[in-house]
Image (cartoon, rainbow, N blue to C red; front, side, top):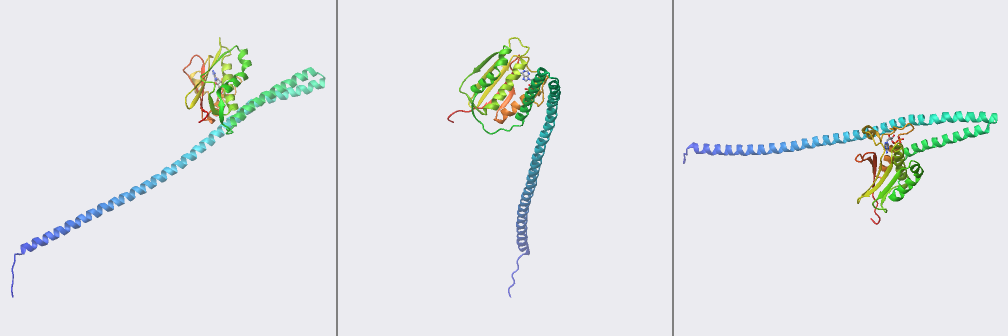
Length: 300
Ligand code: ADP
């Protein structure tokens, strides 16, 4: 029997080292797993939060869209209400007058006063024309673009609208000068509504120039690659800050017999062609309106 004796301390150290190493490795592994799981958890949480956020954004967007369309509807309804009130007001007066004229006309026929009867008939006709004009304005207001947008000659539209108001311009002895940088300029629009816009602006200028000495209207066109500006300036009294702010609102008018729809409709028409109608306050005295429209260039 051989008995070898060795000091136990060596064995203890070996065991201690192994235990320590095992513990360290275990601890390290634990830490790695722990952090890995935490990262995974954090990612999962982040994904969940993101999803919730996305859902909320979607929900809010949907709500916003709904509110927006409700607002548009409410706006339309409010406008409809205002328009009904205005139509009522505008048409009631001539209707009542027409009734009176018609009654008088019948009475005059009965009495054999044909001259008076004829006079009343004429008044009825005049009122009829006026009412048609009022209804026509509203029709334009309700109009949606027919979609027949195409190249329109700026020169032709200006000429047509000035010719339409020639009589008034001459009667008021208004000097009108038209400065066009390029007579071949074309815009993308519809010619009839665009003429209507220019006629509206010119009519307003004519009204504004009623009490002006040496009245003049200055029409100027300018263009860059993409846009054409048509500026219309008159040397009338111009616009107060208050008027300038409200001028494009429906039913805003400072005229006794105005409808206050001309500029609202004009802006709507120009915008339906992708353009703008604005006031330029730089040129005083007087008022300047600027129509900006997309330019059409042949061969592009
Ligand atoms: P209306 O001509 O029926 O009043 P508009 O919408 O065309 O309706 O014009 C609204 C108002 O804007 C006018 O009543 C007038 O006060 C003002 N306005 C428009 N054009 C001019 C102008 N060229 N000079 C001064 N004021 C103007």
